[in-house]
Image 1 (spheres, rainbow, N blue to C red):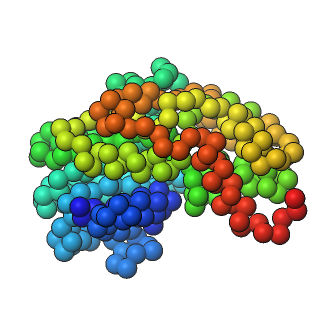
Image 2: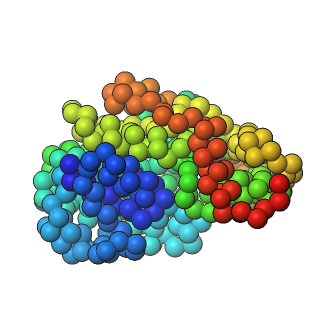
Image 3: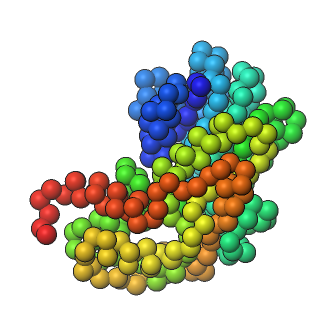
Amino acid sequence: MRIAVTGASGFIGSHLTRYLSERGHEVLRVDVRGVERPVDVTSFEQVDRFFSEHRPEAVVHLAAIANIPECIRDPRRCFEVNVLGTLNVVECSVRYGVSRLIYASSANVYGVRPRTPVTEDEQPRPRSPYDHTKVAAESVVMSYVVSKGLDAVVFRSWKIFGEGEPETSVTTRFVDACLKGEPIPLYNGGRDVTDPYHVLNYCRAVELALKTDGISGEVFNLGTGNSVSIRELAELIRRLTGSSSELLDLPPRTEQEREPMISYPSVEKARRVLGYEPVIGLEEGLRRLIAWRSSLYPRRSS
């Protein structure tokens, strides 16, 4: 299958393009940088030209500004990339006969304290500009499913981690602190609860959704179905690294974050409809991340 992956140079996109290529698919890498012919998804002309020239059979739309502080600083740019960019990709998917589009949304659409475990029928309660862009972009996708016959599904994902993730990611920050013997900062006391899972689980879900018939218009939660507090995550990483790093309780970074986000999913729908099962557990995924980050510190003391 010829599959276009937007945001292909990012953390998830890099893993996904490699995963799909290893399984015999022809992967078309779409991004504003790090590819042979850059494409800005906010430019309809560039997106249309790409689709016209390459004619992808399927699209996985990952491209987005996912940094929440950045979206708060510049919400206009966040909406341009995350919503207008999605509109351009969706419009061209219809124009050029794409057989399946997967839109990468986020568990953030559910808000701070949804009913847990969260099911797909939970009402969105977005908080930050980033959250609102994901709700809006989902509406764009679904409007084309209803009015234009686009075959598309939405993934609402919890916390994805893995090798090559941004250094600002909570898992890498905790791993690096442990490897360096530095304190582990726990904003708001590490009271947030989520479901961190390794990126290869996400790649597996994409593979399943690309080949499952009769799922257009469906929304799927993705994670493992487990709940882990940020404090528990720090304690686990400390144990796996054999570190004696101190857990440092800090106040919330913003007033908005004072109320902890307690959110973890039910993935029963993905199991039932897609046949999805996590292929890498939390500890195994963290061990892979720790090994990868350790390779960047060859001279660190034992």
